[in-house]
Image (cartoon, rainbow, N blue to C red; front, side, top):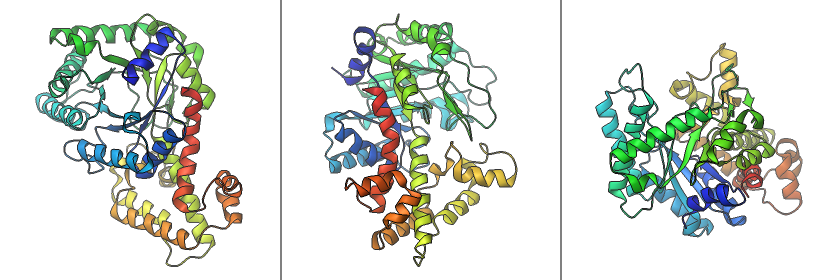
Length: 418
């Protein structure tokens, strides 16, 4: 049985299980997730979004085939069995080309979906919720028709029934809410029902009856979100009607986006309430950023020369190309500078592959490999990792320290999904 089939069945016929969806392109985050899954004998779901990875390269410069190859090779190096690795495409649709005419945007979206399926991704989230080419109104029926159009493109590339679909249009803003936004409204059961029915009709109108039977999750808003400086916590009572609704829909569970920074107890409650797939990304790169900044502080305290200038290089890269953060960070120049470094939205994640930033990062690693951090500075800047080093469970090498800090975030998800 496909794991997503088993996952959905567990919510209708047994003890509800969950699955963490790691949505990140950073190599150390991916390696940490793979090692974590290996350690705990869990399946590992790695997803790429249409902006990160697409047939034209995305902001990572990788095609779906490139990213799949990279993840599979990383899984092989850490020893994760191939059958425990799941690859997913997130927000697959016309979003990167939303400013183009609808026909052009959908043509490229179909090419995107085909590229993901050809590369072996089997969890396919189809998202056509955005207006195209200046459209002022986008009906639920049009969203559904476009979703079915992309599902047909996917099915043409994988006729063996291997694909499992996620649909849904109530998707939180990519990267988190903007500062000052109110607590997000929970999707109503009526809205969820209408989305499913519109999609069912659109699939069947294209003859995609068997594909519809492989829709395993609906993306909704359970009332969790994060922004520049705020975290909106899960409220079980507010989501109870939505939770009860999905119990009447066999074979389908919810997928929750933007679960970053939720407490382990909240994550477990989400799974118990049938939000079975927990998407996380910025929280993992936020943890990576915390560890890198801590290592930069250690480097400075040790007066290592030549210094990496890690923090300064990141700031310079973000100022040189503000496209990834400017719309997200408002306020005074001082506030924007603070947000560039410390925001929960973690727009820094878009800059790790800038050549100057990569060079600074590699210099930081080399410096602290040659001059390992003393215990006293680990205690000061990375206290959780200090305890593990002291206990002999962790190396004081910089890459190991970074991955341990990311793994601590993944531990909260492990408690939730088991």
